[in-house]
Length: 201
Image (cartoon, rainbow, N blue to C red):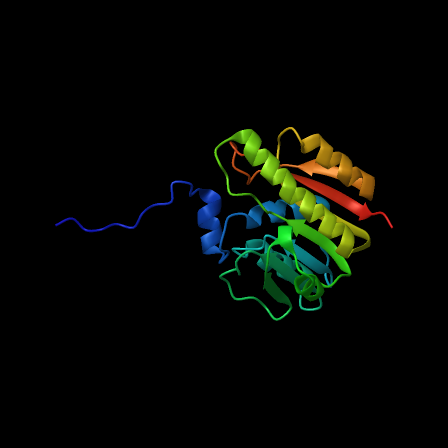
C-alpha cells in the first residue's frame, strides 16, 4: 500500500519558502517590501488601509512598518487567517459593494492606501485585465475618499487595454505617478503596481 504524500505547490519558489520561514502567509509580502524600499511611502505612526488584505502578508508587513504608534486597517471578502497585532484589524466586505456601515468602520484620514487585489482569473487575458481595471478603479475612488491631502496610493493592475487610462486617472489626482514591477513578481505575470504620491487637495 502506497503512502499518501502531501501535494506539492507547483507555484512554490524561493519567495514561497522564504515567506514560510519568516512566518508570512504568502510570498506577496516581498512585493510590498520592494515597493517600500523604492518609495518609502509608509512611515512610523502612519495610518494605512490595505485593500484585498487576505491572506494577510501585506497587512502584517504594513503593521511592522507603522509600528505600535500607527494603525493598519484591512478589508477583504474573507478575513485573513493570521494573528494581528493590536494596532491592526481586518474588516470583511466587498469593495465593489460597500454599505454605509462598512464605510463608517473604515473611517478616513489615511496616509497610505495599498492594494494587491486581483480578480478571479478566467484564463482570457483581456477579460482578466478588464476585471483587474475595475478593481483598481474602485480602489482609486475609495483612496480619494479616505486619504489625507498629500497621501499615497499603490494599486496592482494587470496590463491590458485600460492600463494607460488608469495611469492617467492616477496622474490627475496625485502630484507624482510611478509604475513598478517588483523582482518578486512572477516573470509570466502581467501585473504591475501603479503608485500615486502626493494626493492633491
